[in-house]
Image (cartoon, rainbow, N blue to C red; front, side, top):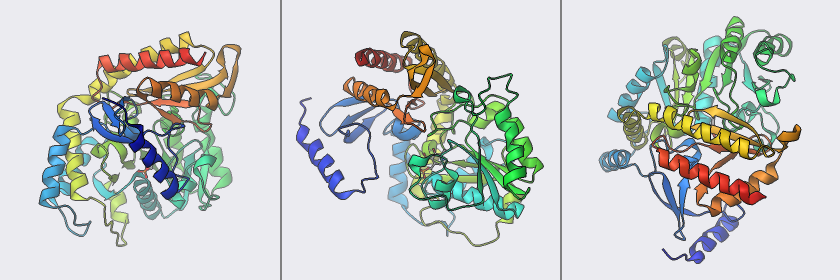
Length: 436
Ligand SMILES: Cc1ncc(COP(=O)(O)O)c(C=O)c1O
């Protein structure tokens, strides 16, 4: 297909003119996407890309998945909107499905329009249930863009205003590559988790509402905790009266391979769980699910105009059925292993730039540093940006993360096959080689 640059240029110009400058795009010259099909997307100028970020871990079953789209089109022609004031078939079908697939005693759902609202709802539930206010969140965590969510978030670049919620206390991140205590696993005795007790005893009233954490810190750069972390951390939180709010916005629905949810790898049952992103293959939907007891404590009225929108719920039902029917949780594990092995080989080929390879399933990251080979782990966001431009030239889309913007996040749709994993690895290798 011939490339007509003019359409893209026009969109980029208008984006600069009419959108908040804070709405940042990837790449020196942002890609204006217009079409998607499975693992591939095309821009308005006709260039094709292999999508290894899937929105932001959102397109779980491939772009324009025909099964999902058929369900969505049928629903929008039947009934497009009602708000949470009316029960609908798609909403109860989804709630029943979520009660079945989530771990432990999670049974009662509330639907909203985003991950931010899902986390907000979870915090309210924890506070009304425990009748306590204070919350433990994690440094390097990300919870969204509302004022509460920004206060839970622990990344200066994602905070437009100072912390608004004094009741949020941030524990250190289980970030082994940059251990906040300078220790090494396993001799560290999981000090990052143990330290939560000191945090509660010194910075709170000693009675907390809860602990909100991602099983793998997504925006933080796929920071993957040691396997004992959540057992120790959640044990301490419960000792001080708090509940565990597990934010599965990125790790949910098979993303981490072999399990439907990230936290299931470690056998911990949260009292509240939040989800969004991959649940409806890109349609806006936030979910907060809680135990019966916690749900019963929420006595005030609550409504969400767009929450549980029948079209989003129909999309979610079709997406989750597709994940189960096609065994995509297993595919995520299988292809994740192939991807991980390839990234570890890449790290051997580029031992200076690649400091760490981490993640689980189809949620893999590489952290770029100044010179790992000589022990200089200074984050290298400039090389990360240069790598992005090189992968773009080779038709590969990847994601960025980390406090310093020096982590490459790789998360293709769960429908990815071996050939596409190999294609992405080949493009990455050529891109690193081109950096010189
Ligand atoms: C772990 C996590 N929680 C919450 C959110 C907020 O979700 P949303 O952007 O849908 O509001 C995000 C978004 O990236 C996230 O990664």
